[in-house]
Length: 186
Image 1 (tube, rainbow, N blue to C red):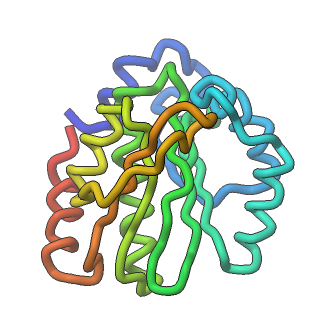
Image 2: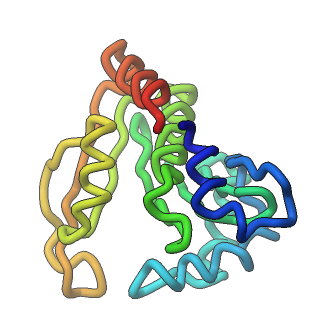
Protein backbone atom coordinates (compact mmCIF):
# COMPACT_ATOMS: atom_id res chain seq x y z
CA UNK A 1 0.00 0.00 0.00
CA UNK A 2 1.42 3.41 -0.96
CA UNK A 3 1.52 6.44 1.29
CA UNK A 4 -1.27 7.96 -0.78
CA UNK A 5 -3.41 4.86 -0.42
CA UNK A 6 -2.83 4.93 3.34
CA UNK A 7 -3.68 8.62 3.55
CA UNK A 8 -6.82 8.19 1.48
CA UNK A 9 -7.91 5.15 3.48
CA UNK A 10 -7.31 6.88 6.83
CA UNK A 11 -8.71 10.29 5.92
CA UNK A 12 -10.50 9.86 2.61
CA UNK A 13 -13.99 10.26 3.96
CA UNK A 14 -13.03 13.67 5.36
CA UNK A 15 -11.91 14.90 1.94
CA UNK A 16 -14.96 14.58 -0.24
CA UNK A 17 -13.96 17.68 -2.22
CA UNK A 18 -11.62 15.52 -4.32
CA UNK A 19 -12.35 11.89 -5.21
CA UNK A 20 -8.69 10.79 -5.19
CA UNK A 21 -6.71 13.16 -2.99
CA UNK A 22 -2.97 13.00 -3.49
CA UNK A 23 -0.07 14.33 -1.50
CA UNK A 24 1.79 17.17 -3.19
CA UNK A 25 4.68 19.21 -1.84
CA UNK A 26 5.21 22.66 -3.30
CA UNK A 27 7.01 25.88 -2.45
CA UNK A 28 5.29 27.90 0.26
CA UNK A 29 3.58 31.13 -0.78
CA UNK A 30 2.42 34.04 1.38
CA UNK A 31 -1.18 32.94 0.89
CA UNK A 32 -0.33 29.62 2.61
CA UNK A 33 0.45 31.33 5.92
CA UNK A 34 -3.17 31.46 7.07
CA UNK A 35 -3.46 27.70 6.42
CA UNK A 36 -0.24 26.77 8.19
CA UNK A 37 -0.90 28.85 11.31
CA UNK A 38 -3.43 26.38 12.80
CA UNK A 39 -0.81 23.62 12.39
CA UNK A 40 1.92 25.83 13.88
CA UNK A 41 -0.30 26.67 16.85
CA UNK A 42 -1.29 23.02 17.37
CA UNK A 43 2.18 21.46 17.30
CA UNK A 44 4.48 24.03 18.92
CA UNK A 45 4.18 25.28 22.52
CA UNK A 46 5.70 28.61 21.45
CA UNK A 47 4.60 29.00 17.81
CA UNK A 48 6.03 31.33 15.23
CA UNK A 49 3.88 34.32 14.30
CA UNK A 50 2.53 35.15 10.86
CA UNK A 51 5.18 37.89 10.71
CA UNK A 52 7.98 35.37 11.23
CA UNK A 53 6.66 33.30 8.32
CA UNK A 54 6.37 36.43 6.17
CA UNK A 55 9.98 37.31 6.95
CA UNK A 56 11.13 33.74 6.20
CA UNK A 57 9.32 33.79 2.84
CA UNK A 58 11.02 37.10 2.06
CA UNK A 59 14.39 35.46 2.78
CA UNK A 60 13.33 32.59 0.53
CA UNK A 61 12.88 35.09 -2.29
CA UNK A 62 16.51 36.16 -1.66
CA UNK A 63 17.59 32.48 -1.93
CA UNK A 64 18.49 32.26 1.77
CA UNK A 65 15.71 29.84 2.74
CA UNK A 66 13.37 27.25 1.29
CA UNK A 67 9.89 26.58 2.66
CA UNK A 68 7.52 23.91 1.38
CA UNK A 69 3.91 23.01 2.09
CA UNK A 70 2.41 19.54 1.87
CA UNK A 71 -1.14 19.27 0.64
CA UNK A 72 -3.63 16.47 0.35
CA UNK A 73 -6.08 17.72 -2.21
CA UNK A 74 -6.48 21.38 -1.33
CA UNK A 75 -5.82 20.97 2.41
CA UNK A 76 -2.44 21.99 3.82
CA UNK A 77 -1.36 19.06 6.00
CA UNK A 78 2.22 20.09 6.78
CA UNK A 79 5.13 22.36 6.05
CA UNK A 80 8.89 22.43 6.40
CA UNK A 81 11.85 24.71 5.89
CA UNK A 82 15.57 24.97 5.22
CA UNK A 83 17.97 27.77 6.13
CA UNK A 84 21.10 28.01 3.97
CA UNK A 85 24.44 28.59 5.69
CA UNK A 86 27.71 28.27 3.77
CA UNK A 87 28.08 24.54 2.96
CA UNK A 88 25.27 23.43 5.28
CA UNK A 89 21.50 23.48 5.19
CA UNK A 90 19.68 23.75 8.51
CA UNK A 91 16.19 22.29 8.84
CA UNK A 92 14.23 25.03 10.59
CA UNK A 93 10.97 23.16 11.05
CA UNK A 94 8.90 20.19 10.03
CA UNK A 95 5.30 20.28 11.15
CA UNK A 96 2.38 18.01 10.31
CA UNK A 97 -1.23 18.62 11.25
CA UNK A 98 -2.19 16.38 14.18
CA UNK A 99 -4.93 14.84 12.00
CA UNK A 100 -2.31 13.73 9.46
CA UNK A 101 0.52 12.60 11.73
CA UNK A 102 1.77 9.01 11.39
CA UNK A 103 0.74 8.89 7.72
CA UNK A 104 4.20 9.41 6.21
CA UNK A 105 3.83 13.13 5.49
CA UNK A 106 6.95 14.04 7.51
CA UNK A 107 8.96 11.39 5.66
CA UNK A 108 7.87 12.81 2.32
CA UNK A 109 8.81 16.33 3.40
CA UNK A 110 12.21 15.10 4.67
CA UNK A 111 12.82 13.45 1.30
CA UNK A 112 12.05 16.73 -0.45
CA UNK A 113 14.39 18.66 1.85
CA UNK A 114 17.17 16.08 1.39
CA UNK A 115 16.87 16.10 -2.40
CA UNK A 116 16.74 19.88 -2.45
CA UNK A 117 19.84 20.21 -0.23
CA UNK A 118 21.76 17.79 -2.45
CA UNK A 119 20.64 19.56 -5.61
CA UNK A 120 21.80 22.91 -4.21
CA UNK A 121 25.24 21.43 -3.44
CA UNK A 122 25.18 21.53 0.36
CA UNK A 123 27.57 19.18 2.15
CA UNK A 124 25.62 18.61 5.38
CA UNK A 125 22.20 18.91 6.97
CA UNK A 126 21.64 19.93 10.56
CA UNK A 127 18.68 20.46 12.90
CA UNK A 128 17.60 20.69 16.50
CA UNK A 129 14.98 18.38 17.97
CA UNK A 130 13.31 18.46 21.35
CA UNK A 131 14.98 15.88 23.61
CA UNK A 132 11.58 14.36 24.42
CA UNK A 133 10.47 13.95 20.78
CA UNK A 134 11.49 10.33 20.22
CA UNK A 135 9.36 9.93 17.08
CA UNK A 136 11.08 12.84 15.30
CA UNK A 137 14.50 11.65 16.46
CA UNK A 138 13.84 8.23 14.95
CA UNK A 139 12.80 9.82 11.64
CA UNK A 140 15.99 11.86 11.56
CA UNK A 141 18.15 8.82 12.41
CA UNK A 142 16.52 7.00 9.50
CA UNK A 143 17.85 9.77 7.24
CA UNK A 144 21.36 9.41 8.70
CA UNK A 145 21.33 12.18 11.30
CA UNK A 146 23.39 11.56 14.42
CA UNK A 147 23.44 13.49 17.70
CA UNK A 148 26.26 16.03 17.89
CA UNK A 149 25.43 17.95 21.05
CA UNK A 150 22.79 19.41 23.32
CA UNK A 151 21.48 22.96 23.56
CA UNK A 152 20.35 23.37 27.16
CA UNK A 153 16.91 24.93 27.64
CA UNK A 154 16.66 25.69 23.92
CA UNK A 155 12.88 25.33 23.75
CA UNK A 156 10.86 27.84 25.76
CA UNK A 157 13.87 28.16 28.07
CA UNK A 158 12.91 24.83 29.64
CA UNK A 159 13.45 21.86 27.27
CA UNK A 160 16.80 20.78 25.88
CA UNK A 161 17.39 20.35 22.17
CA UNK A 162 19.50 17.61 20.66
CA UNK A 163 21.60 18.98 17.81
CA UNK A 164 21.76 16.44 15.00
CA UNK A 165 23.93 16.41 11.88
CA UNK A 166 23.92 14.44 8.67
CA UNK A 167 27.33 14.76 7.00
CA UNK A 168 28.44 14.15 3.39
CA UNK A 169 25.00 14.44 1.83
CA UNK A 170 26.66 14.66 -1.60
CA UNK A 171 28.13 11.18 -1.13
CA UNK A 172 26.87 7.96 -2.67
CA UNK A 173 25.92 6.50 0.72
CA UNK A 174 23.47 9.33 1.45
CA UNK A 175 22.06 9.19 -2.08
CA UNK A 176 21.43 5.46 -1.64
CA UNK A 177 19.92 6.03 1.82
CA UNK A 178 17.31 8.51 0.57
CA UNK A 179 16.65 6.39 -2.52
CA UNK A 180 15.98 3.40 -0.24
CA UNK A 181 13.65 5.47 1.95
CA UNK A 182 11.79 6.56 -1.18
CA UNK A 183 11.54 2.94 -2.42
CA UNK A 184 10.37 1.61 0.95
CA UNK A 185 7.45 3.96 1.42
CA UNK A 186 4.57 2.12 3.09
